[in-house]
Length: 90
Image (cartoon, rainbow, N blue to C red; front, side):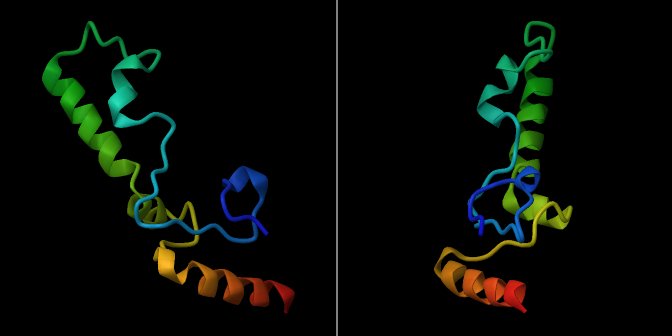
C-alpha cells in the first residue's frame, strides 16, 4: 500500500489532494533550471514560463492527463484508501 509515491514505484493506485503539485521544477526556480539561459530570456517570456509551470503543475492538470487516479479531498483520504484497498483484495 503506497500513499506518497509516483508511478515508478508501481502503486496500486495514486491519488492527489487538491493542493498537490506535480513538477520537476517549480515556477520559482525556473530561471535556475539548467538550459533555461535566464540571461537570454526577456522578462515577459520568463513570466509566461512561470505561469505555464504554475498551471501545469496543479493536481487537476495531472488528473486531466490521467497521470494519476484522481483528486480527493483530504478529509476523504481514509475512506477512499479503505475502499480501494478492499477492491484490491477482491
